[in-house]
Length: 495
Image (tube, rainbow, N blue to C red):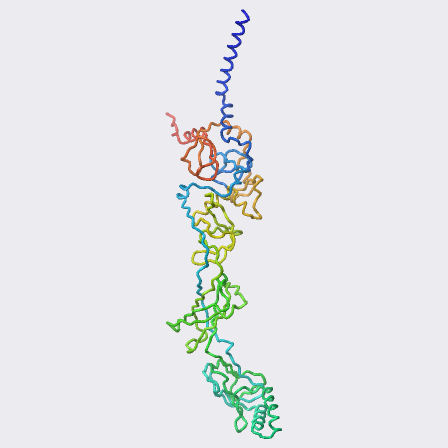
């Protein structure tokens, strides 16, 4: 055989071997598996995986890939660069299906108005006490029953008080004297009356008895002596209360104290006086909080010119708090309270939903003041916010709100135990994913990719779901065979 023939045969065998090798390589299961594995996640080598999770149980995190122990689906990787984009993106059609509604944050003040109960009492600033500054004997009482109405100058009682009687007689004698020495002693006699505490308006009869008279108009609310009783020095005899004004003590809840200050106008209605509105003002907030009811009493001065109101009456109090500074107002239903933090979901300029931590103020009329966190003009989610909040927690958006106890987003999250199971039981009940399991998953044939939230939509390549902010999940061919085998009717053996 010539050299040319041998060269031609060698070239032919080389071509045949290359064709056979190419055909065998594409028929090899290992090569198919390698091709499938490279198409599952292109560029996965460049991405840092934080953890794996089951989309149907996103709170459970795993430190390696494999099959989910909860659902018959593979775990989905969570990449580090996924947490760099703030917020959650949701397609407009999905928003409508989920019932997500947004409202615009407006600046304003809460509507004033607070209705609380109250009780009428005496105005102690109009109270007068008639007492004995010296030892005396009560000879006669002109007012014998409490709560009698008296006029200024009306007699209250007649006393035998020698010290008062002699001092009054001395002053009266000096006041009638015409000599210069007597007139000089008149000032000393007047000072003696003041030191002995002779009540204003008291008079001396011809027989030396002292008549005590009412200093003001009012009601004798207390009588401390009886006829024939000896009144010792400093003993109170009568207590007279004015009725032109009364105190209305209202119990204000702690949450409604904002805007209630001295001078706040008040309108009160009393069931005992139907059809009338009584006006007043807040005199002061008493510096004491009732620990049981969590209320603080406000002292309100009510005008009572005709005396129709009496102490002890129950009143319905309407306060008009002073309008404070304007704050952003959001619907109360838009707030998400976690116990350690309150937040809202804001739709930003990039059409993404972002959680924002806020500090709340007063609430009323279905809206709540936001003291910090919002400036006004933002759009917040008023319904469906809890679904977005769960997805934001999964995407790591909540870790960037500044919580001191938030985990480090750059470190892989440890697998959490299931609710109701301790960690030891969890480790024994959930299978560990071995290298053999990973190799078996890589060799399985992929039919398509899908979003677990919308399983009816199929995709021919991996990537992000266009509906929710999560990775598409592969659908393997052997899962359909296993499903068909499970649903196929059993073969009954023939006898």
